[in-house]
Image (cartoon, rainbow, N blue to C red; front, side, top):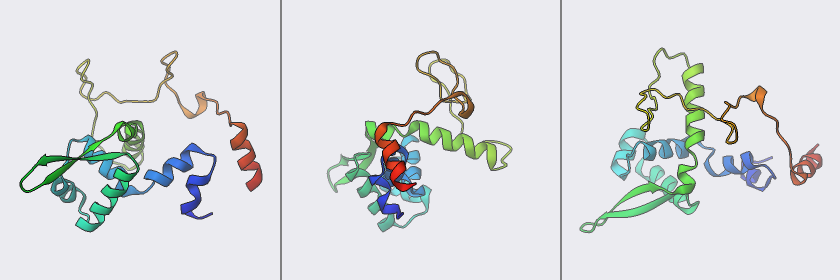
Length: 157
């Protein structure tokens, strides 16, 4: 299967990867979450060419993940903000950051998340059940495939 065909699968993960599965897209989202919103700031932090960054920002804008806003009229200058869809990538970034902290052998995490509500400096965000609040781990969840996903997987088996 080609990467371009991922979005056609009956699988939310495959569809998500088709949209934001490349490293640069998630790094742009991370920078925007760190409130680095202007093109020059993004380019400086990411070390990517201007044309490559512009193309990726335009793609993310077309997907509804990023919106471009004018912050200066003369000359016209823009900043980039995450939409609700873009902010929805928050748990993905937290999960990948947590995974990287654990498995990349660093003694000190390069980025931590603090809780504004209680003031804890290193809050260690995690996935939890909406109903009971229990932490969700691979061995404590079940996965139920929809009939469409079952049929899609059967066709490829």
